[in-house]
Image 1 (cartoon, rainbow, N blue to C red):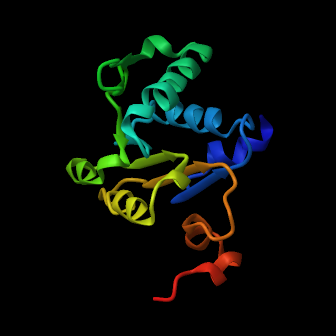
Image 2: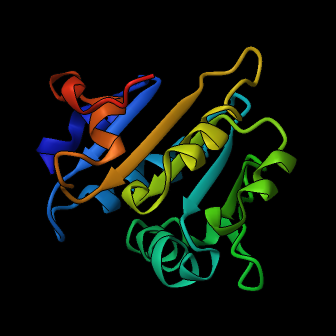
Amino acid sequence: SAKFKSLLESEAEYILAFGGRGGGKTYHIELKLLLKSFDKNYCKIVYVNKVFKNIRDAQYSSLKKVAKNLGLYDYFRFYDGDYRIQNKVTGIWFIPKGMDDSENTKALDDPTIVWWDEITNGTLDDFFALNNLLRTPNAKLQFIASFNPVNDEHWVRYIFFDEFDKYAPNT
């Protein structure tokens, strides 16, 4: 869809994709990440869900489906046991992470892209834990968040949207 062209082309440090169910945001993020994995520059993609066991039926199966639809499936190795994905051409990895045990994120080595689908299911502390991982030197870093609209007092509003500053906690 042409409305997602800016998402596909963006190299911004933070990308927020939000809207109703079935709007195409997840498909276009997955398209972006699959294509990005053919880049010759260093890249390690971490894809996140609040609960690890939900990754199989959400992002992992959807990434497989998008790769098949694009005719790219044979260029990837999909590990059904732990939901890792590797681009066979470039060696670039997609590493799944659940934030149900955010301590496990500390072991991630040099990620360059974090995509958190349904970020609104997580906490502000979860976000900070993931955001702190993006410090790989000499790499283009990106945090992509996708979610459905949330209430006015959700932490996502006061972290990412200036017009909702009135909801920021008093610190």
